[in-house]
Length: 201
Image (cartoon, rainbow, N blue to C red; front, side, top):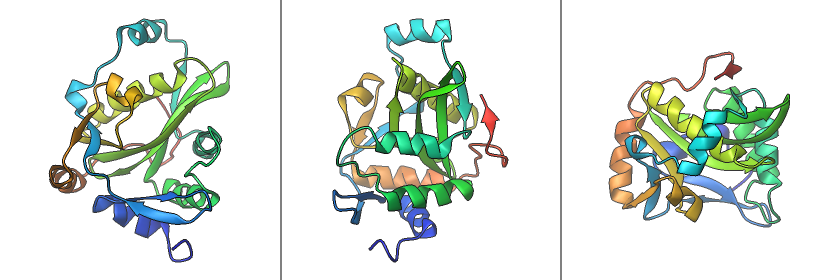
């Protein structure tokens, strides 16, 4: 599949509810979980302990200033990552097309955490996150949610449920319901980041 896979095809996949992941051998497959994990943006929960961290504002939050560093760090989190070299290339292309974005946490001029994902219309598809400082990825997730609300997005897709996401209020919905929400969200016109793709928050 890898030879035929293009950034444009990946983008079309998101529009119809599927996304690519690589196996341990680098072969890329399409996935469409049922149920699907999402955040209801108006019900996003910030744990009390994290509210204390946010009040201290220990990180500088930036958008799209180090996209390729973020995806590289996400790929290095563990052996057997689904973020293969081909996946990294495809998402770098999506980034240059203005569809893939990173939300980053910086401290003392160093990248210490962040996440990346894809935006299509009023939908954002979260892909992966990493941290090299305590709470750095959690702060990035809260910043992502705030940005989506501020810019009128209506869907934050996180694919599969994890205990970490559940702590922030993620829920699972049937795929049929998800596809209906997806169609409505992608029909909207929304902008995640300015054309320069170097947008401090």
